[in-house]
Length: 178
Image 1 (cartoon, rainbow, N blue to C red):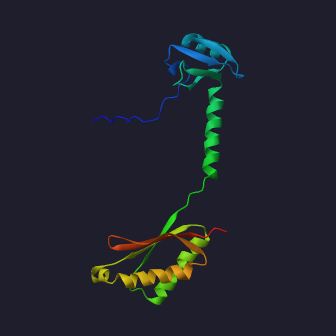
Image 2: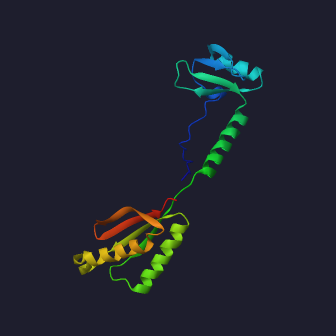
Image 3: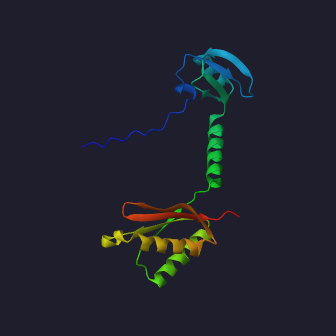
Protein backbone atom coordinates (compact mmCIF):
# COMPACT_ATOMS: atom_id res chain seq x y z
CA UNK A 1 0.00 0.00 0.00
CA UNK A 2 1.39 3.39 -1.01
CA UNK A 3 1.55 6.26 1.48
CA UNK A 4 -0.18 9.40 0.25
CA UNK A 5 1.05 12.63 1.78
CA UNK A 6 -1.93 14.63 3.15
CA UNK A 7 -2.53 18.08 1.71
CA UNK A 8 -2.26 20.93 4.14
CA UNK A 9 -4.86 23.67 4.35
CA UNK A 10 -2.22 26.38 4.07
CA UNK A 11 -3.26 29.06 1.57
CA UNK A 12 -0.79 29.46 -1.26
CA UNK A 13 0.92 32.86 -1.25
CA UNK A 14 0.00 34.99 -4.24
CA UNK A 15 3.56 35.75 -5.40
CA UNK A 16 4.94 36.02 -8.94
CA UNK A 17 3.77 32.98 -10.98
CA UNK A 18 1.08 32.06 -8.41
CA UNK A 19 -0.88 35.21 -9.27
CA UNK A 20 -3.62 34.09 -11.67
CA UNK A 21 -5.37 37.38 -12.37
CA UNK A 22 -5.33 38.68 -15.95
CA UNK A 23 -4.98 42.37 -15.06
CA UNK A 24 -3.57 43.89 -11.85
CA UNK A 25 -3.01 47.33 -10.36
CA UNK A 26 0.71 47.62 -9.64
CA UNK A 27 2.34 49.59 -6.82
CA UNK A 28 6.09 50.19 -7.02
CA UNK A 29 8.69 49.44 -4.32
CA UNK A 30 8.60 53.04 -3.05
CA UNK A 31 4.77 53.09 -2.82
CA UNK A 32 4.18 54.89 -6.13
CA UNK A 33 1.31 53.72 -8.34
CA UNK A 34 2.50 52.28 -11.64
CA UNK A 35 -1.03 51.77 -13.00
CA UNK A 36 -3.03 48.83 -14.29
CA UNK A 37 -1.17 46.31 -16.43
CA UNK A 38 -1.26 42.68 -17.54
CA UNK A 39 0.09 40.09 -15.13
CA UNK A 40 2.97 39.13 -17.46
CA UNK A 41 4.10 42.74 -17.76
CA UNK A 42 3.90 43.30 -13.99
CA UNK A 43 5.93 40.17 -13.24
CA UNK A 44 8.51 41.17 -15.86
CA UNK A 45 8.79 44.68 -14.37
CA UNK A 46 9.36 43.16 -10.90
CA UNK A 47 12.00 40.74 -12.25
CA UNK A 48 13.76 43.62 -14.02
CA UNK A 49 14.05 45.38 -10.64
CA UNK A 50 15.30 42.15 -9.01
CA UNK A 51 12.19 41.95 -6.79
CA UNK A 52 8.94 39.97 -6.53
CA UNK A 53 5.32 40.77 -7.36
CA UNK A 54 3.07 40.17 -4.33
CA UNK A 55 -0.73 40.42 -4.38
CA UNK A 56 -1.68 42.53 -1.33
CA UNK A 57 -5.43 42.89 -2.10
CA UNK A 58 -6.72 39.94 -4.18
CA UNK A 59 -10.40 40.86 -3.64
CA UNK A 60 -10.10 44.40 -5.02
CA UNK A 61 -11.23 45.32 -8.53
CA UNK A 62 -8.65 45.13 -10.14
CA UNK A 63 -6.47 43.12 -7.70
CA UNK A 64 -3.66 45.20 -6.17
CA UNK A 65 -0.10 43.88 -6.40
CA UNK A 66 3.05 45.41 -4.99
CA UNK A 67 6.64 45.07 -6.16
CA UNK A 68 8.78 44.15 -3.14
CA UNK A 69 11.39 41.73 -1.78
CA UNK A 70 9.06 38.91 -0.73
CA UNK A 71 11.63 37.08 1.43
CA UNK A 72 12.23 40.20 3.52
CA UNK A 73 8.49 40.96 3.68
CA UNK A 74 7.66 37.40 4.80
CA UNK A 75 10.41 37.48 7.46
CA UNK A 76 9.10 40.79 8.87
CA UNK A 77 5.52 39.42 9.00
CA UNK A 78 6.72 36.36 10.94
CA UNK A 79 8.69 38.61 13.29
CA UNK A 80 5.57 40.73 13.98
CA UNK A 81 3.55 37.59 14.69
CA UNK A 82 6.18 36.32 17.15
CA UNK A 83 6.24 39.69 18.95
CA UNK A 84 2.44 39.74 19.20
CA UNK A 85 2.47 36.20 20.60
CA UNK A 86 5.03 37.19 23.25
CA UNK A 87 2.89 40.10 24.42
CA UNK A 88 -0.38 38.22 24.73
CA UNK A 89 -1.37 36.98 28.18
CA UNK A 90 -3.28 33.74 28.52
CA UNK A 91 -5.24 33.33 31.74
CA UNK A 92 -5.56 29.76 32.82
CA UNK A 93 -8.47 28.58 34.94
CA UNK A 94 -7.19 26.23 37.64
CA UNK A 95 -9.63 23.53 38.79
CA UNK A 96 -10.27 22.71 42.43
CA UNK A 97 -12.72 20.11 43.76
CA UNK A 98 -14.45 20.20 47.11
CA UNK A 99 -16.88 17.82 48.75
CA UNK A 100 -19.95 18.71 50.86
CA UNK A 101 -18.54 16.57 53.69
CA UNK A 102 -14.95 17.86 53.48
CA UNK A 103 -12.73 17.66 56.57
CA UNK A 104 -11.34 20.90 58.05
CA UNK A 105 -7.71 20.04 57.23
CA UNK A 106 -8.60 19.16 53.62
CA UNK A 107 -10.59 22.40 53.38
CA UNK A 108 -7.59 24.41 54.63
CA UNK A 109 -5.28 22.67 52.14
CA UNK A 110 -7.61 23.45 49.22
CA UNK A 111 -7.96 27.05 50.44
CA UNK A 112 -4.17 27.42 50.64
CA UNK A 113 -3.78 26.10 47.07
CA UNK A 114 -6.49 28.44 45.76
CA UNK A 115 -4.82 31.41 47.50
CA UNK A 116 -1.48 30.57 45.85
CA UNK A 117 -3.10 30.42 42.39
CA UNK A 118 -5.01 33.67 42.92
CA UNK A 119 -1.83 35.42 44.10
CA UNK A 120 -0.18 34.27 40.86
CA UNK A 121 -2.97 36.06 38.97
CA UNK A 122 -4.81 32.95 37.80
CA UNK A 123 -8.52 32.22 37.95
CA UNK A 124 -9.80 29.31 40.03
CA UNK A 125 -12.88 27.20 39.31
CA UNK A 126 -14.15 25.47 42.43
CA UNK A 127 -16.40 22.45 41.83
CA UNK A 128 -18.39 20.57 44.44
CA UNK A 129 -19.75 17.23 43.29
CA UNK A 130 -22.80 15.80 45.06
CA UNK A 131 -22.79 12.01 44.97
CA UNK A 132 -25.57 9.64 45.84
CA UNK A 133 -27.91 10.87 48.58
CA UNK A 134 -25.85 14.03 49.18
CA UNK A 135 -27.81 15.73 46.39
CA UNK A 136 -30.79 15.98 48.77
CA UNK A 137 -28.71 18.12 51.17
CA UNK A 138 -27.62 20.96 48.90
CA UNK A 139 -27.70 23.42 51.81
CA UNK A 140 -24.70 21.61 53.37
CA UNK A 141 -22.73 22.05 50.16
CA UNK A 142 -23.81 25.69 49.86
CA UNK A 143 -22.60 26.42 53.39
CA UNK A 144 -19.18 24.88 52.61
CA UNK A 145 -18.98 26.86 49.37
CA UNK A 146 -19.98 30.12 51.11
CA UNK A 147 -17.39 29.45 53.82
CA UNK A 148 -14.76 28.99 51.09
CA UNK A 149 -15.78 32.27 49.42
CA UNK A 150 -15.72 34.08 52.78
CA UNK A 151 -12.23 32.76 53.60
CA UNK A 152 -10.74 33.86 50.26
CA UNK A 153 -12.70 37.11 49.81
CA UNK A 154 -9.69 39.26 50.84
CA UNK A 155 -7.80 38.14 47.67
CA UNK A 156 -10.48 37.06 45.21
CA UNK A 157 -13.77 38.16 43.78
CA UNK A 158 -16.55 35.85 42.61
CA UNK A 159 -16.95 35.93 38.81
CA UNK A 160 -19.62 33.25 38.75
CA UNK A 161 -21.84 32.76 41.78
CA UNK A 162 -22.52 29.25 43.13
CA UNK A 163 -24.77 27.49 40.62
CA UNK A 164 -25.85 23.89 40.11
CA UNK A 165 -25.01 22.16 36.83
CA UNK A 166 -26.33 18.63 37.06
CA UNK A 167 -24.91 17.15 40.26
CA UNK A 168 -22.07 19.70 40.47
CA UNK A 169 -22.09 23.12 42.11
CA UNK A 170 -19.39 25.44 40.81
CA UNK A 171 -18.01 28.95 41.21
CA UNK A 172 -15.27 30.89 39.43
CA UNK A 173 -12.93 33.14 41.42
CA UNK A 174 -10.54 35.72 39.99
CA UNK A 175 -7.97 38.04 41.58
CA UNK A 176 -9.33 41.35 42.88
CA UNK A 177 -8.49 44.40 40.80
CA UNK A 178 -6.15 46.79 42.54
